[in-house]
Image 1 (cartoon, helix red, strand yellow):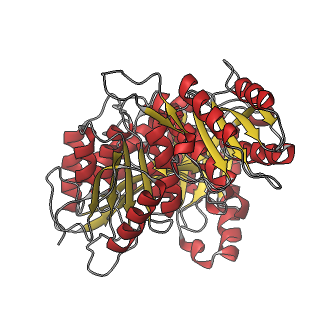
Image 2 (image 1 turned 180 degrees about the horizontal axis):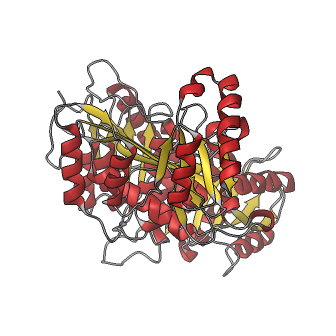
Length: 552
């Protein structure tokens, strides 16, 4: 049987369970609960997380998952649990969509990054493999959460200290103190170095590395570090030759533990095979501690939402048909139920119709091809902007028809759209899709090459908070263009976030919306203009009921 401890471990694989039990025994890591769930015929990881939420014996949660059968429910439960107890997750492969024989798992078309974003939103610690998961677990189980990301490095040589410092920087830590104690250092020098790295305000976390090359490893260093870590409560990891897991040599009485007449509690510094393992575990825990201290915002609830009318429109559109593409007017009407205004566009075929539409809309106008391959391709002549008068518009209609037919022959018969000119700004793309596994998935990017060629896209799995929405806008690599890049005016990101929030609520409310695309959303200094919308509806297939149901 596993030794008693504070780590709850769920494993969705019998062979991996054998390995994990052997690993925890070898390292001396105690468990509060262990479950090998196989194909989850009766008990799932979601069930165990709900149990661990209120289990006082479990302080750290670890899950090895071959697949996530209900990601939406997982994200809600994990986010609630991670706010009070760390949750460490390993998924089989990078996608987490492995389907072993005998398992019932819904298929998915969502990009792999959807899973990563869902886990990030949930606040779980994503481990690279089971070895990394146990590395993190032994740190969380036996050391306090870090107070910050300033790291102090104490090594057995100057070169080793420099290598550890570089690894710390790569793990997004800030090196604030480095020192080394040579193999032949005096006891006074050891005490001085340990005292310096644990001095008040010297750092927030400590990495100690001792790899002697000539003499045997000195136990006085490990014992001094263990006592200092226990005394100061400063998060500490170690990599010392011959020590691994939770050895007695790196333990000391914990003066901060409650004294109830029993033997004093013991503080243990976890030991790792390599300095890189120690720093990787420490970096993961520091990021989690920062997430836990961060304000995650409140669920977005935009004003002016008419869910009842939206539901009626969807049911009417799907009457007698399992799926349909909404006409532009119907798509605009549906979006209006969620406070998203789509700028009207007049579809025309001749120059006379275009001029009449422009007089109705008001000059200046934009002229766009409706051919699927050209509707957003200004570089191929599919869009003409700031057309100021009738003569220019007539000339543009004729020139576009001739030039576009040479590029895409089918464009010769495609109608045009005439639309009022929006203020100059940054063109963005907001999309949502209904995935069989993840449910609604919302995405955001800056229109053009950033999305089409570089896949510079942020994903979110509703329900989202205001902080989630703001993070999506800022997480794409092209985001600086929204905030005054190279002298350009900063745009109204609040208006953009409002559009994104409303789309996320629509997608969450209406599982019949198979796909939605707002392209482009032009964001200027004064607001966000949604110039085009496409909506595809289909019968609802979301399997996300609150009731626990077995697959099949």
